[in-house]
View 1: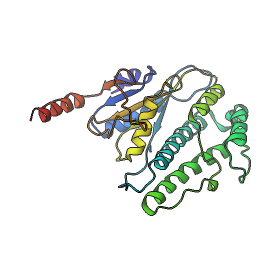
View 2: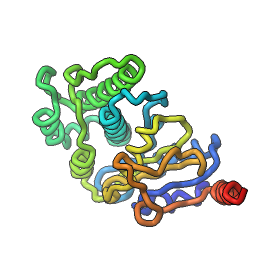
View 3: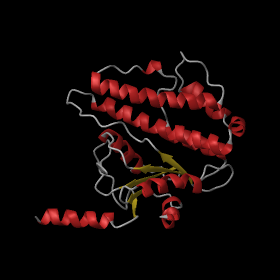
Length: 261
């Protein structure tokens, strides 16, 4: 699979990458982080591999607020992305160097995003902890709402909302580079449809100068190509495709047989 590395990471188009769900595929996706790390002052793409990328799948009822579920799913995904960007940066660059560069971002989150009941963020480590807490908050809030109809109380978390575009733009200034983050999703989990739609929204967005979505999946395992506004994301117009093996070819043959029968 190594021959696909450049095709996937050195083009900023959003991509659906089709291949059978194997341990080799998972290892390949993870390995892209080592081949394309977060670096300072070097204009190369950066791979961010998400182990978790969506809410667990539960049966939803007509009584549940679909707009609320959409909001929870969006914030969860966006916090997962920024947390992993920050985590990878700490591991590759180090806290000391990031502390010298991230005062502007910390100030922005204190002024614009922090709940006033919580203490000010002072260090990069504070920001990392706040992002992690937000991830846990949205996961537990979604589960509690879907299963027990419990209300969502955003006052319980330091940073309740994430502006993904703004964070990535500011963080690229920190890194002193113009290249993009390639967000690698290895689709090997049965996640909520609301999470799939949020990923599709990113694929349908003109953000690939900063964020390029790379979704690796068995062709028949991606639950939907519809976004939250009910519009389809479109091949060529919104994303390109890469085949790691013959899975897409076999999937198309199966679809043709089904239609003929």
